[in-house]
Length: 504
Image 1 (cartoon, rainbow, N blue to C red):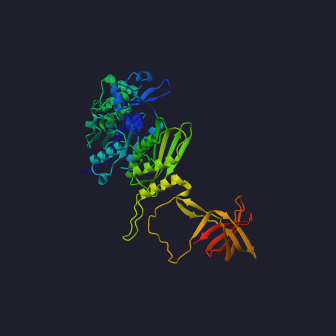
Image 2: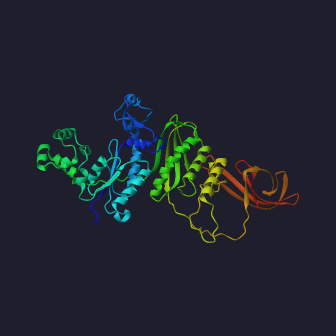
Image 3: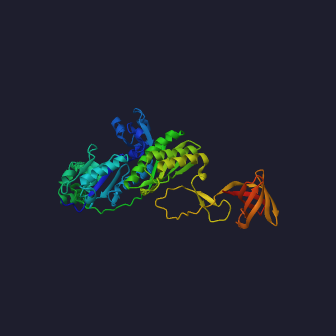
């Protein structure tokens, strides 16, 4: 079977304001929910879920009319959440084809995907459609999916398809027969056109397609020719693809302020499921997760968690976020939260046959998180020397697991180790010929046998942290015969001697 030169898939989701708000709230899926829009007290229903529709809720109802039903869940419309959900669906569609066109309406989501040339990647249209439908459902959205060689045929059929039939593939050349039973409302008629067709007794696309073209144009103008071609599935379309950005972000506004960390982590878990699902679709992992909490009182609380290696382990992320928020709790109840993830590579480290086993990244991350919660953020990691001769000229950097074999040459010569004393201890020193000859340290008297130095260092004359040091390396002997190898420094600015380090 030869694949048609044009092939389009249409995704159509009704009641999109309600679906966007309920996507991350699985606890409300089995309850009647309505979405209100407008200023209080003139709010009206703009969308609802299936449970509310079965109760009799319709669009345009006021708050007073909604209150007459049995305990419906009332939500306020959030266009920001709808925009973010629309971007997520476009991103999902872009995984099957780079050519995606957004034709969303006020209360519905509609996009078309150019599938021409995708048979070798995803198989026949039926197989691709099932895979695409399953992927969208995993995002928490219910929609209809149609595939046709005509763009507008796919769009019209998606609008008019029964909710009990979520998937339909139109065979090439059979567009008119598939569209015939659909109502005229799928064509977006103007009020004048709808009234004219109603007076003529034309109610379906099949009845419109059967009208004589010349007579129809004579009575309604050239626009009637376009409507007739749409009804027959013959109207051409110039595809206008969009380019959605790939941003791993999920946001939720809470129904009531949350103070307990366990309740917050339940919501975070649902949002992490979506972030991991979207990252896996692109064969990526989460390298870091940033949590932005909107607090009661217009403040925000932001925390960022970055493990040693990118991972898609949901339980690990929840545990790391739990430890971090437990060590740095928000100072007010939480009204909303946003999770933003940075994607990373899912590459793995392959060790040699006789290489030592590295610690498991999951256990290492949890251990570092627990230590960080005890000793503080700035005391965990690896020490990195700074480009300075100033004392304590280093900073702590994030610990990372090496991704390859190190090429550094390890010397086999024995080296002496140094144990730095923090803070340095002030001592009393006796000089002889401008060189240390004796000093007292920790209630012991030491006689200097060998003195090396001095080495003079100074810097930062341009700011308040001006420093100047005179350093001596000494070999001294105590009265009991024990030998001490140490490093003494003299603060030239304050004329103070200090014990800085001990050599082993």
